[in-house]
Image (cartoon, rainbow over all chains, first blue to last red; front, side, top):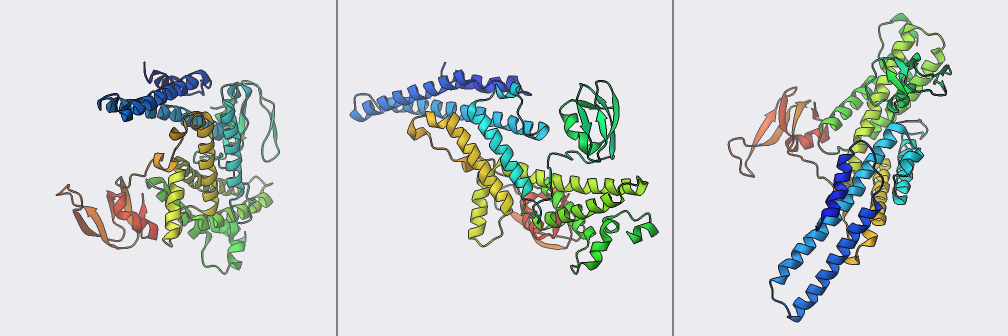
Length: 196
Length: 234
């Protein structure tokens, strides 16, 4: 059915709201094919219309096809855009390094986009302040702080962890710690630590 | 820090950096700056559109954070209650500052291309742009990246006449009719609000908002007062 592929693209994202599903190259290609074939049909119709071989009622067919083209194009752009938004979320939650599990789900342009996005954000952060060396990290302090230390439980085994005041902690599974909130904020968001 | 030891209850910003404040010829105290940042942060959170930037405030807060951090580090080794409370206060300020910048970045990313266009127009009209030069660079790069990836994934493979895409036309436009809670910091004359007795367009009433009065009002009506600082959003 006309436009069905484009709808599938959007549905795919909606069915997996929390993850970045594998880049659907196949479906994208089919959408582009569909657009191209509609476009070709339109060109042919237009030529026939201009030559007067068909009646004016064919003009509305032209419009319908054009609407289909626009819709498919829009769905494809929305697909790319929403994947970008999810990648962006990832940057804020986990940092600028993509694990291979996510990388395989992305197309080449998306990996490039991610790196450039991280670079842009880093440039912005280092440009803050008059001296330009304030070391602002916008991804910490996402919530208003309530206390200096937080009680956390380790959910997964993790390496030795050094806090900003130089104390080292060994984060083993099921161990309980009292850590500076700022330092472990990233680990909590990554699901390695859990607030108790 | 002499004054803090005499008065353990004064935990404000002044006590942390009073050494610097004395030398400063500038009349703006750290507490004032924090007040301004809080206001800017609150306004940015409540306004449906991007407000003119307050990077003058951000810059001075950042340099003060640096100073406070150093002070704390000097006293850091003795783990006193006072140190902890000061550290907490500092964390709160950092949060405020980060959150302010994040809110702005969010808005900028949402309609980067449109905001760039608007700033260009403001500059032509001789007005201050809404974004700082740093933010503007960010927005330009962001738009360019977005365009690039659209082109690579979709547009380049389409017939030439379908390749056109105007990001500024696709960006969401801020809804300035949205209702906001506003407090008048000064008495504001000539606030025009839509007349509730008539819902046709163009029918407006002029009202005066007394100092310290609070109202629920369309954002459009108070926009210019928020810009000038005569009103704040809640």
